[in-house]
Length: 544
Image (cartoon, rainbow, N blue to C red; front, side, top):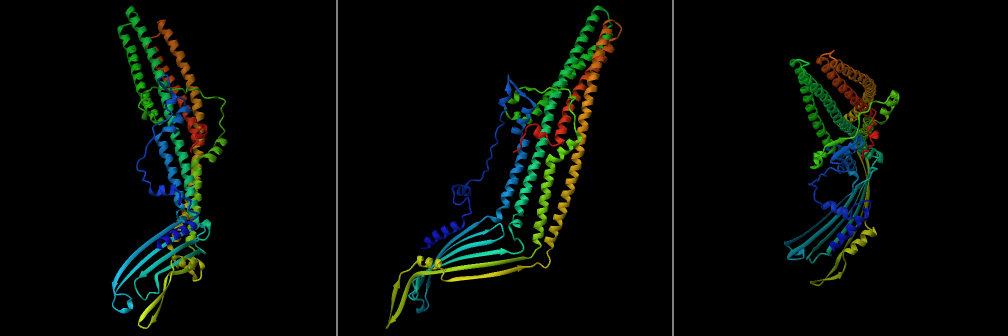
């Protein structure tokens, strides 16, 4: 019978626990008994094969950004911060999770009797007890519990009227806060704080992704810069070799002194050294870019040469930057501002939570108990010197019928007041929450000032780079014309070799400066996109 009590009580508890979504589904039990996920697999880099052509890894700026988002380890690490923030939201619902508690105990005792009133020379008794309890706190602060208690006691005493004696007890209790923790809003504050922190972490993620994409794009332009620098160095080497060849021819013809050959040879050796340095610098920067796109993790693709398809184009003269429009865009979409606003919202919620803790704790409680009794009833009578008994069969069903017949109720209510005469902790928490809100508002103001300054500096950098590219192009053209003029004068015998060599050096310097200014212009455009917060949108990146 006691096992039947266990079954019925479990069925009752399951009925009351209808809001438990996972119990008793297969997923619920799988979660309870699953092994801890100690082994974590890291996936290999993906989509690299899509950009392999003719034995090279061809990358445009857009494809490079796509591979960074797909394979970069730093990006994957930053995405995990949002996952932990999602777990914090789930954790904030924990106070409202229902719980079920069940217990069963059984004991048997054999006791020697001291007198005839024990009903047996050796009193043998069996006691069994089963209990179940379901408790939950609702979002409005109401706490309720439903409990079932069943006991079975039996012995071999001749004087026991009910043997076994079965008692059932069903208890329902409800407690409602009247001042502190009253209402769904105040009890959901931890959830709302967790959601605000999640949004703040999401804004942090976008900020970090923007920073990482900016670094990756700069690494892309580093490779472009090193590649173009190598071209300039090779062109200078070709000029130095051609001029050295010309001087050696003139030396053979006796047109110049043997002492005049050393300077062209030194110029050729210096140009050769610069080419070698540029080659190794290009290799180093390509290795950095391979790390950004995850190609260094692929044993075959990391050996392929890189072919970057972006070209260094001069700035467009038609592009006009509206300063006020850029400032308004930055103040609208910068994720740092979103994070600061969400943090300020969380500070507001913390103030309300601290204020709630200062209030008195007044609770209204009520309870109702229904009882049932059953078992085999022995109606005993004395006939002379003997004892006769009349058995009336009974059992657990009788106890349950009485239990749900509600014929033996016990009910009551209570009113509990907890009034702290002085609550320093809550007062200090409220003061800290107010200070935190003021700090967050000041941080928001400071951040807006910083963003405004960053946008203005980025606009100034773009405009300066545009003018610098124009001036560097003019300087390069003049250096080219000067070199041509010096070569003609040298060929006519009106100039010495020194002036031709100096013109070659000046041309190489001018071409390097033009390349640096053109790359700098692209970097400053990138800095402007980062400052106004539109880098992800411009590069077609969606953070999920």
